[in-house]
Length: 78
Figure 1 (cartoon, rainbow, N blue to C red):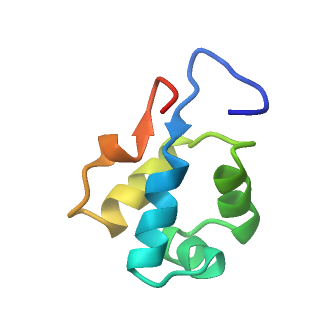
Figure 2: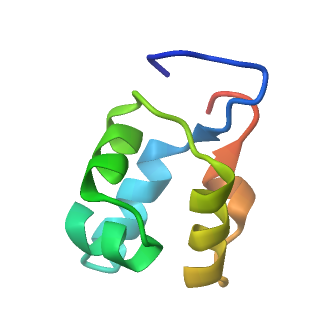
């Protein structure tokens, strides 16, 4: 992942998010609206220039409870 790293970085499995978007026919804008974040946030996460914060992870889990959160987020790079 590009960008700043700290010991609290949560990595995003970009391929898994893109596959989910394709499966559910979601654009970046639609995903952002569902998660309650800006389209820019989704764009930066998908470009790998930003990790995931707690709010994003909680929103993701709330909106997609059928998915295993560890398939999308981890403390180690995918």
